[in-house]
Amino acid sequence: MEESEVQSRQVDVCMLRPRVFVTRALPEPGPSILQKYCQVEFWSKDMPPSKSTIIQKAKVVDGFVSFLTDSFDEEVINACDHVKVISQVAVGYDNVDITAATAKNIIVTNTPEVLTETTADFAFALLLATARRVAEADRYVRAGSWKVPWAIDMMVGQDVYQQTLGIIGLGRIGRAVARRAQGFGMKILYFDVTPASDLEKELGIQAVSLDRLLRESDFITLHVPLTPKTQGMIGYQELQKMKPSACLINTSRGAVIDQNALVRALKEDIIAYAGLDVFAEEPISANHPLLFLENVTLAPHIASASTQTRSKMGVMAVENCLAVLRGKIPPNPVNADLAKKLLTSTNAKSNT
Ligand code: DGY
Image (cartoon, rainbow, N blue to C red; front, side):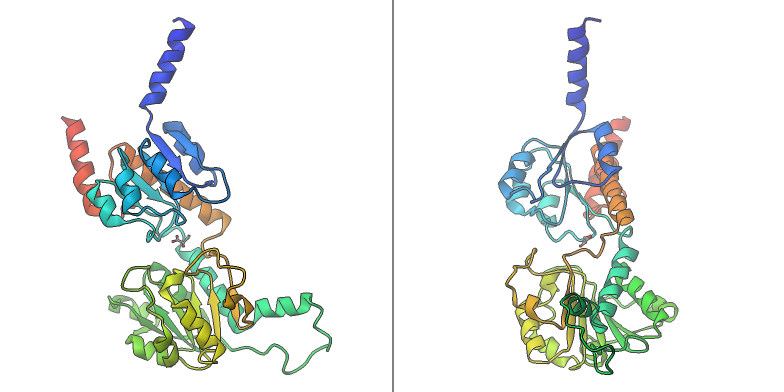
């Protein structure tokens, strides 16, 4: 075979491979797996691609591997010419307009389960750190403020052991937090639109109204997805129902809490502490009032950030993406009905 023929065959093979745009760097081995089967473009900059860049790519690619920093709103979805899949590297997918994607026959997938335990670890770490003022104590020592050897009133915080924990949202992560709280001998209340009576005995949890949970809990931890119903569900009114000694932990999505109301409640001693991994706007601005409150522990949206979990999330997203591009129902479809309808019929077609 002539060299030119070999080259042109290689080009042909290359052209048959689906095109995928990965909107941020992805830890290995996800990228290597994807590159075996697809023509892949990785966005290599630190800042996420702009909306106009995503729209540009939407016109030419078959699939996206996306992150929560990308907005796949109706405008972006409508720009998708032959996109079959938006494979999100996260369990949350509030950045994707699922209705618009479904109307455009685009399968959306996410990465549940792999990050459950890691996120629950972090929620509990934030709870302990906030209650026992770990970050504040670290700042104190580093600043050279520790002058007296030991003092009975130095950096006193709140006990966690045997206190009451209120879990809002008893999905996978909420349950994993409950299991950790059992080890701390906590009384565990939960509020969820779908009570899980079958799990109550095993997890030592009790279903209560939101009102009761807010009034009785020493620690309140949020594990709900961001939806129009949960947006701002913790506002000033809810904060006022909490104990003055209460500690609020959020590892879900920032917009679940009305952030201005939280600042006000913390300043007015309506509640005592907050531990926050997520914010209405990320990154939070350097002059945001939350940054100046000592009774708040802050983290930059890292609850799922362990080496093992981030790598698993990448592989899972790649597997979801490849499945759709091969006409198979992916392991984790968000719009599952569409996946069933579309991909079964695709398979049926190829079987004939
Ligand atoms: C998610 O998966 O939704 C987290 O916020 C990032 O891991």
